[in-house]
Length: 167
Image (cartoon, rainbow, N blue to C red; front, side):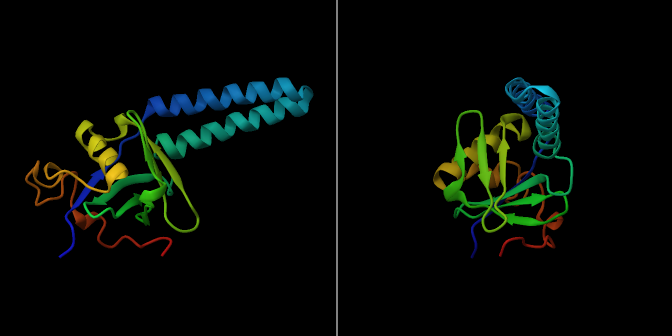
């Protein structure tokens, strides 16, 4: 019998998008100042545009490769589900978590990373994700809290036919 799973959807984070834009814009200004001239201005503008693309995909969850849902199990297995419906296995040994962030890393090639913040999941789900990243376990409440047959946050029907990436 396989371990119960937690499936939960992600929501966009305008605060993370603003932070990504601000960091890339500051780096672009610094690069423009160091290089100087038209080449510096162009390099700085390209770096700021890279920040906009990063915020679009990573924080606002737009585009086909954007992470839209997580599927975690109590035995340490996990996967991200992209907007295209592709199931991307997660490498828990490379993931990290702090009080206000979780870094998820995909297994296999190409390696992808996602930074999640508390606003992208419910408070409980974010706490459960941090527990899963650190210890590979989920609390019993993650399976029984909502009376959804052990699958809070959604049903498996949405992801049952998702193709597997990187296997």
